[in-house]
Image 1 (cartoon, helix red, strand yellow):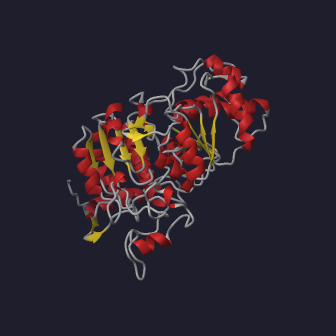
Image 2 (cartoon, one colour):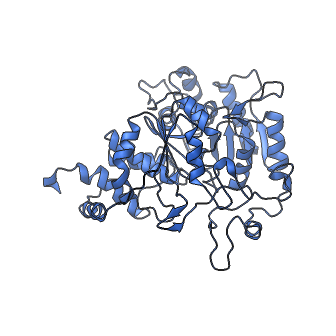
Image 3 (cartoon, rainbow, N blue to C red):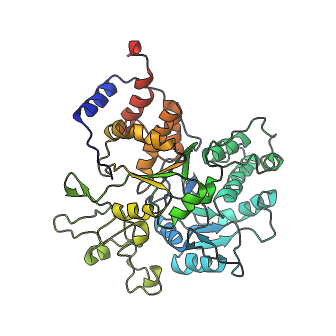
Length: 454
């Protein structure tokens, strides 16, 4: 791993440029209700969900662990668009087994304590008025928020957005109202192409509106990025994610990613231990990795028992053999006995065709201006090799870095970058994120102005 020391000159240059900034207009998101990061109450565990409204979130087919994470994040219902019979061959996601419908129902209802429902019968057509009518019929009875899923998040996004559009057709005062144009704009922002694969007449029939003359198309490379559905597309070949797992690596390589950038801290920072937390079942986030005062380290037994999300969870919530109702380590997400172990993740990539870059951005006090002044040139070089995934713990740091890098590379303006951040569930504003705001202004406004205008 290459270690860089950002010079004082770089820091002063950033500060000087910020002092000369102008204040650009700010944009609004396509998602009027999207004001929080993905994942409801637990962005670190459920970063892979995609919010359409605060009550409706979509995803691909979840693993058993993801179902449990969804319960911890506050989801109340899991709706499967399709039925997955136990007679079919076992499906996996990068080696992680995917529960069939009977298994999923048991995990959701008996272990996680949520409501479970399957929407379509095996012979039902999903791109249809009938599918939307079925969702409309069950929606009032489902506890919310709901995690709706299919195989890759594609078909369920169509049905969910069409449900909102159809409700708008029936009642123009329905909130959030979705028009036909909104449908194509939102789906494009999610990286989903419903123009090439879905007859536009179907959309017109459901929305009651004419077929758009020039609907918005997504701009993603590769086009089949949905095979790694957990990622969040930013623009063209830029994607973000929270903490990836070992099982994700072969899927990312098959999809066509060339590089992965990890922004999470390593073991040490400025000569001090600096491991971030690792996700643990039935253990709260953001309780601190290390001992402090009378507080024991996070993964010690007494501390784990103190920080349980639900002390009354049965032991089998963790696994059938577990003797306790909480997890104490998570090697699948590159954890050790202390927390997240970056070295372990790096070693795993050595066995993969993916190129791996560690660019630590401290989670406690990230200095985006200094970081991007030092790393932007390499980020752009990495992007020239092909699709790149930037990840951190929850996707937040990754979003701020990847959106700005994409804007710089493809000459997108400040307004686009702010809107794209909002569409990913985050914010760039002078009041709430001043350091990030100044950094975006520096790169997308100040550096682009002719010198005689400064």
